[in-house]
Length: 154
Image (cartoon, rainbow, N blue to C red; front, side, top):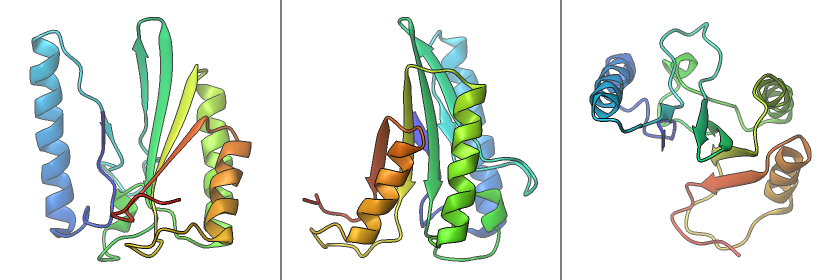
């Protein structure tokens, strides 16, 4: 399972995003032909498409995986990425979307991966970050997989 959304997703502009989607689809098809599964989400084929996610069924479990990024190195083509601005209004809108995704996809485990817009190489979690993560948990996530800090946080 791969999250394709992070601050580097748009480094090669829209052609890079489209090539990533094409390549990963090919890898997925090749794996399926061998009886294996590879899952990816976090990029979108069109700007109008909803955020991408995976519903994985394995050994009687249903796992819902929804990745987002709050940070892009370039703003152009952000509509092709599961991008959520790190502001209150955008986060509130995402919480509603996440609730709808979970309601439409009953699961045993709901994982939200957040490539955060927080400072790198700092060990402490700010009150604002903790509130955001708690909001995600309160609104349906079982696991919040916060990443990007390049260091383990307390």
